Length: 98
Image 1 (tube, rainbow, N blue to C red):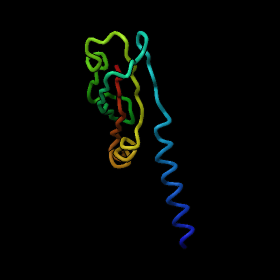
Image 2 (image 1 turned 60 degrees about the horizontal axis):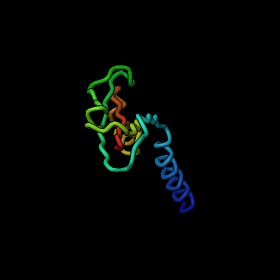
Image 3 (image 1 turned 90 degrees about the horizontal axis):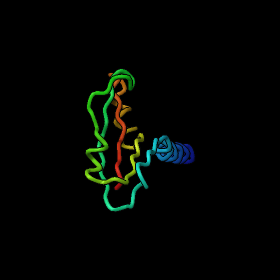
Image 4 (image 1 turned 180 degrees about the vertical axis):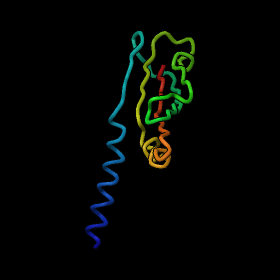
């Protein structure tokens, strides 16, 4: 029984870590210089077809000309989506690095 619990625990940690592998990265200008960082959560309804809120990456970048935008399903989004997925609501994280 102890080995089975350990195997399930290792598989769970692996799967939670692998969730963040799906990402879209957009480089604007020369890309990020590592000076600043902003993050927001974007929400969708009907399995990701209808946006609920608007996350403006340009506004998050401020007056920066060179920045990087990364949209991904973080491990926290994965956990949230487990519960909200029953009502077809999903989230993803939008990060802007200046």
